[in-house]
Image 1 (cartoon, helix red, strand yellow):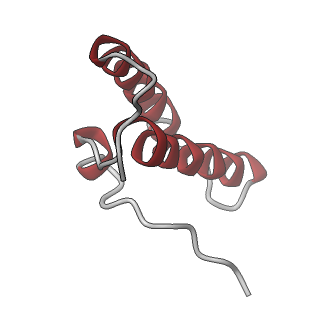
Image 2 (spheres, rainbow, N blue to C red):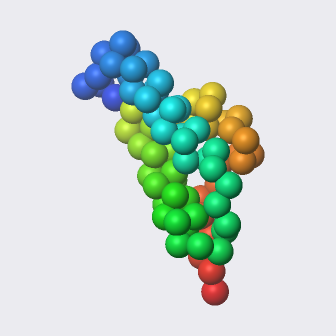
Amino acid sequence: MKPSTQLSQAEIEHFLAAAEALHLSIIKPFISPHCDHYRQTRVLHEVLLNTVRQVITGREVEFIRWNTTGPVLPPTRCA
């Protein structure tokens, strides 16, 4: 994938700093995996990571590869 050609390097770096802060605010709170809030934060987190990877940088970035939850994997569907 290609990085964004519409943003300058400075804008990309600013976006990545904000994305990392949002990433940390999503993964930090301990929420029961059985509640709706947990599922919604997982959806939000996946959208954030996909946007960074597919739209902004065209690659994985450090905070995505080495976050506290391990490697980022696509969500699995419950049966």
